[in-house]
Length: 179
Image 1: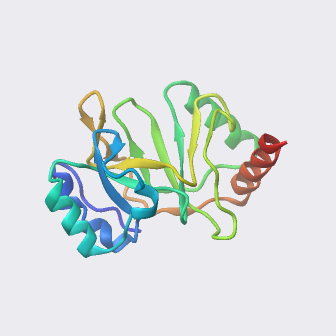
Image 2: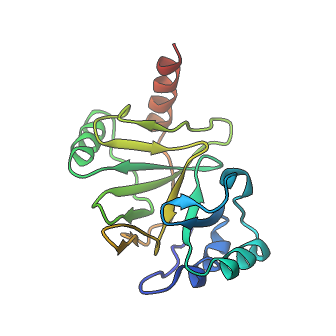
Image 3: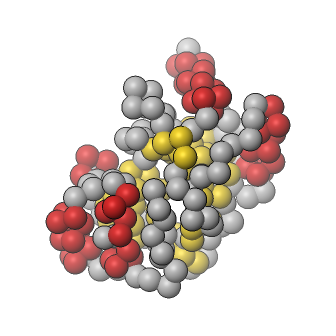
């Protein structure tokens, strides 16, 4: 995925370049989805996107996670420490698409195997780490989420496949959570 240039652009003009990335998106009012069934209605289709963002020109841009992609968010400051500990214990995470949100948190985007949907979790990978998986969403740049600062792509790196160790760790955590 090539990251669209979002710097200084309004969300409605960015929704179309995301079309090439085949990311399921939907409009949000602030940090909440405009539609109650956002996950089912998130679309990669250009016609639906055009209608939505024409009808909601000031909407933020929601991205439905868990379909083929999930996001690991390292909240400031504890999440950065926890992420570093995970990388020390297992292996470095690959370079991947990364968003910096207004709170200072880092959001790392990863593709996941279709046969293993990633479930969402809070603090299960470590203190300050949130995983946005099946049934959740994040706001894509240039959406405004915290401190009136727009979310920004930190890198232009394409989304990478999640490393095997991360998928396996998330699977184990899900099994342990269910028992």
